[in-house]
Length: 382
Image (tube, rainbow, N blue to C red; front, side, top):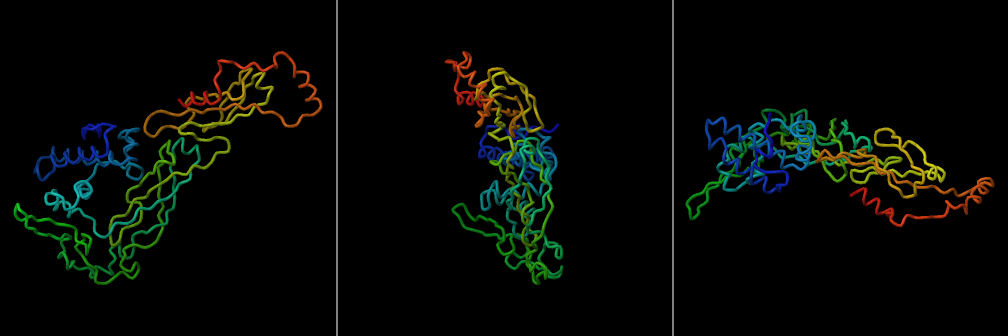
């Protein structure tokens, strides 16, 4: 059984993002392979820490992990991608954790440069996905076509006309990094940074690809399957790694950022994780009581209207709302009862009501201890 990510980093669900980052840095330094040569146990702990940080440092992945655990991390095509990370992935992320030019640069330099992507990274791409309330409540997989920059098939993303059109970068000599030696009061200090000329690839193009003109990418279209978890809402932005615009000259692709747009329902409205339904009944049903069906997110439900039901009463269907992304809780469906007053009456209807107008039980007798409509609604959401 896989270890809990929080236990691996020694943090909890309420730990801040900065403290999660600090915890990972500490473990990365402690179990780094260069500090523990030949120690398989240390290498395994190093990988575990990187995988835990990859999930807990990402708000969307963290929310899914908090709700579903490791099971929610399976599969790299959906949100939260999980699975074991390889060493190249881990070292390629060190620039975000330790920063280039930091005191850790020389320690991690060789590892990082060997795992660095060549070319320029692609831009993130934002899209909106329209979903019905039913799809949001139950979760759904959507297959969409995204217009974006894709890898050039002629040069396989290199930007070069052919294999003979690529040579070593003159600035860095093909190493992909530029080393500088500076004199400090502590003596000479050597640092290395990514070569700005070749962006770390160590190569330069002498003859450009005729199809993409050296970009390594062209405008195209990709079919992508998006796995939307149940309970998604427009306030949360999901992301899919490496599904954005392709990078220049073999650089890594950007991310696909996904926002949810709710398609209005004919009868139901959303209020947080609750579902709101306005029920209109006539005076006779309110006075005598009745049974009827109301729409829900998943079909219809039968409810009972008690005799003497007053306008403004709020009925509750427990658990008929939206699930929460972060917990196992689920909202309710709240039914607001409205007693409909007819605007036109025929002579027979008018005569019947005239007889009842002054009847003893038709005199308003409000309950002095009763709560107002707004108090009832507040209690429901409380």
